[in-house]
Length: 476
Image (cartoon, rainbow, N blue to C red; front, side, top):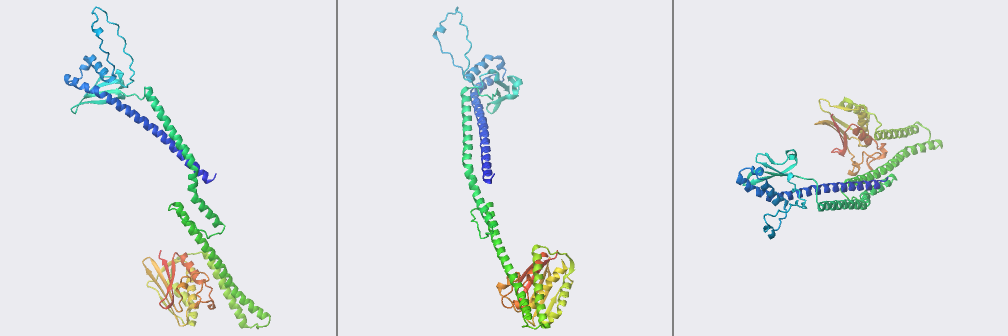
């Protein structure tokens, strides 16, 4: 089942459930409201009866007269509650001879008012002390009481048994009609929800369909795709992330293509030189001498260094290089590696100044990889710094960080080249060129080693005329 159909069923189910809940709640609310209306109506009908009881209570001072004067109690009920029609005055009735027997009394016609208070057994009376005066004590829990108040003084309570049934046919017809109306409204809501659920599902899925189409293009390698952001919701955020992903993939593809082209070019140069010199020896153009063999060996070593650097850089990219971290004196390692290149530094006539704090700084890291870091920085300085130049190296501690600064003298690089020195196989076009023999991978490998130690590496212009490499390590 497609997500469009699932969303359609979800919206339809939610709307049907909502319609049914509304129907049940509306029906319940109407029933409660109608019962409350009937209750208020009964309370209003009792007010004249209660008003008639007050003067009788004031005249007697208590409710004893109810038991001694039953006729008066019945009279008040018939007058104010049952509302029975009075018999008209008949003149012949007054002229009836006294010796005539009165006609037999007919039972009163059944009350067709169907008022909830016409049954006398449902009428109760209590005094101020809540003592029952009239009524069945066994049913007192279901009685609704109304206070008899005179001048803010409670004289007693009149109560009646509420009924939950509607006895008149008109009331029942009214309730049934309202139930039908509510049911019709609920069915209408269900029909309308069914009618609009599918278009709503299509509308909701439209941005997702655009996202899906772009994903299909990305899987085909078409990274030059961008979605139009039309909302600020989660789908809008997803579209932004997808646009960023497309840009990143395109950059990676271009970088990979450039990487392959640069590697091919770097490998082609020493291989072409080797091939040309060997062919020249084979054709007798060049004699096989020690100088010729040394030239071949130099090109082979250069090719070997390039292959090794490429291999190490690839390993750092895929995380395959192993790191065995331990605590060690970084200044001691730094001096050892500089002393190892003492002869090369003297040949280049470079003045080296190493500044380390006291007491020594202990760094947690992989000693071999950090030695490789120092060696690569030294090779970079030896290759690209003019003779009779200088190299200044310092290590300081600032709060919870170690700052390692490497500065060399001219020549420098442009601002544009400065940002790209850590890119693999990149060289500045002028002073830092290929004739020095560098592969363009040394600083790229340095950055990978620093990142593996959770540090940062930045390159700036040096006041000495060359470049300044600032490496920051965490002390923890």
